[in-house]
Amino acid sequence: MFKKPPEDDEPREYQEITYPAQRRRRPVATYKHPSHGFYADEHPEIPRVRRASLNLDKQQNQHSSRSASVEEADEDESESIKSPKATQPGKIRVTPDLRSSSSTVYSPPPAARPPHRAQKRKSTQHLHTRSPFLIRLQQLSHSRTAKILGIVALIFAISAPIIMNLGHNHTAIILSGWGNTNTNQPPAIGSAPANARKLVIVPQDKDHPAPPVLATSAYLLDADTGATVYAYNPFMHLPMLSTTKLMTASLAVEQGNLDRQITITSAMSNDMSQLSADSALFGIKKGQTYTLRDLLYGLLFVSGNDAAIAIADALGGNLQNFVAQMNQKAYKLGMYDTHFVNPHGLLDPGQYSSAHDLALLGRYSMSLPVLHKISGENAYHIPAGGNHPERFLVNENQFMWWYPGVDGGKTGYDGDKNFIQVVSVTRNHHHLIGVVMHTNNWWTDMRDLMNWGFDSFTWISPRDVDANQHPIPYDYLWNYFARDTKDITIPTTDHGRYYIYTGFSITGPIMSYFDKNGGSKKFGYPTKMPTAAVGQMISQQFEHATIQCNLATGLCQTI
Image (cartoon, rainbow, N blue to C red; front, side, top):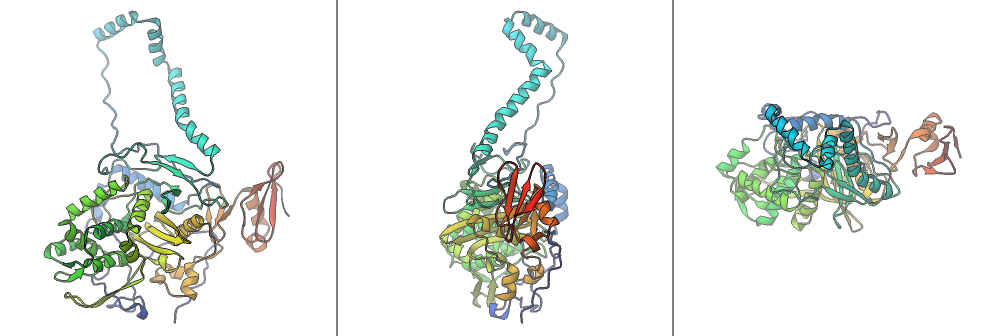
């Protein structure tokens, strides 16, 4: 009998979730039939975690050799995960990066030597032969006041178009060059076009505020039109972990016959032996033969890093050639903030992507019918043969087991708190691609983005589905989603609270009055955003009452 989730004894406001510790696993990954439960054959009583994990043999060397830019980003992101990001109603909030967005590192020229005495004299003599206008211009160039005024004018010239756009257009926001691009990282193939990092964001839901995210970066793309619906730090360079496998799978579907027989050679086996002991594995061995289709299911269902190597070696001849093809494809798709080093996604200082680029990859990969179908299925059966036993695989993308409309995608996880998702959802013939990078709550972030993108806030929880409808694979790893209750809120940047149940937030004097006078037990959940009344009066509607406040006096009342 299915175990009922334990009661949630956590405080009402969202708290950071700690993921279970990494656990080493055996290399064979054979599953029983789904009707027998989601368990591995060698230990039926203990489900195993499957993820793209750290390569333990290289972890120490990688940590010490990381570039300064990556360390900078990691320090910033550690604070970002602790403090969720929020947006203003009808706007997408982003953090501008003041550093260059190009792929080269700017180095200042060496300091010039002081001029020789004779050179000074010559320069002075030349000054007397110039016109009064040129003399005055040179004098101004040495004036501290003139320099300050010039800097102010330059800043105004740059910021004025952005300010005017934000102030006059609440439904179409232009972003250019936002997010930390970690310019010390290896550049992508070729050079990005001048407008590569310019986005026009058109929110599709104007009644609800854009949701805050716990992720370091996030993106929501309308796959039907290519329009950007939501963006937060869209161009920030971050490890993309096993979402890398979407590119590996895309090339495999494009280049290979899915019925092609692939035998695991000594070279493939040697490359697989370099994976860490706790690496996520499909469980293939030297001498076994699988079809390319089988390897794709092992790649996407159980995130098999060994399957990625087998595909790359078989189609590219070796890993280096295949990775070069991955980078070429990324450039063609406009993924200018992406660089691949391996076909599986294990951490490497030179491998990174961005939320924007992963959304492009998600859209392209889901445009391939075969790949869209494979990534959206729940289970797959591999008959015995080819020197391997019968296999039953279960799709470990948990989001598709409970959220309505999910039809594909890929997850990534490094065993700590850096969970990544590329999710494809289709409802009423409307197709969205969502991306969250480095979040510590994968179900809340993606659900909030998708709810907002579809303008549908009907409460759907993995906790309820897991307890009342059907078990979700590996539900025990998340304590049966016990924390996911209707009263959970996420702090916003304006010191308010975002209610994931209704998609509205409260803040300021209304929130103070709300908390002091019974809270949700008396007023219920917010059902609209605050609206301005006469003069300094504002009001906000809740399920059971409306709160009205005078901003001038700070006095509030229930109406």
